[in-house]
Length: 271
Image 1 (cartoon, rainbow, N blue to C red):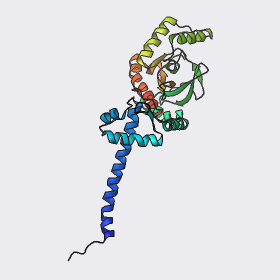
Image 2 (tube, rainbow, N blue to C red):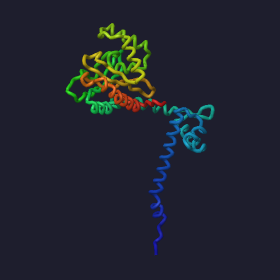
Image 3 (cartoon, one colour):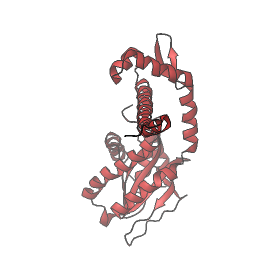
Image 4 (cartoon, rainbow, N blue to C red):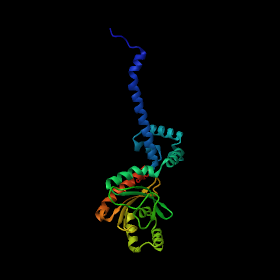
């Protein structure tokens, strides 16, 4: 005769599957809540619109939104809609304070240097110069004279030009005039301006041995969560390794690296 299980044994037998089901349900609710927050961030305000977009019933969308309002992740608007709440602003400041640009960028700079065999640098704008805050030397038997902390003119370096891409043309002209007055080697201002327009349209820049003899570079801007340019990634080498064809090829990987770093800083181009 089969021995009947005690209530405790029956409960234990059903425990793990029940816990797994509960875990799946909790994860699903969490993901739906995150989807809802992202939808509100992208401009969808009302729970009717949210329910249709996310494939939820209106009651489910309303319940999720109400819970997020209670925790401060969303806030109600006068017309039965929602906006991002104060808790997200608080967390955004915390995330920003915990983000170290060099720490975020370093592994990507190392990968780019390994792939290209060239010197890779991360530069920021400081006192109308580009200041390199991190440098990953290349593996070629050449020396690019840069160390973290070194500064160079904006208008004659690929990184410096990348830092200026969002500036108005009047700012480009003023900076070029200042560099020329400070003794920078002669350059045709009209040709330089024309090139800058092309760089701004393309999203990357070239340094054409304007600052250091026989040294060329390719750079692209790094943007923060607001879309502001906060740094530039550059790859530099001697002209022998930097033909026009190779610079065009490098522009793809340099820009991709800068965009990856930007995403880790919270930048969302589509938004």
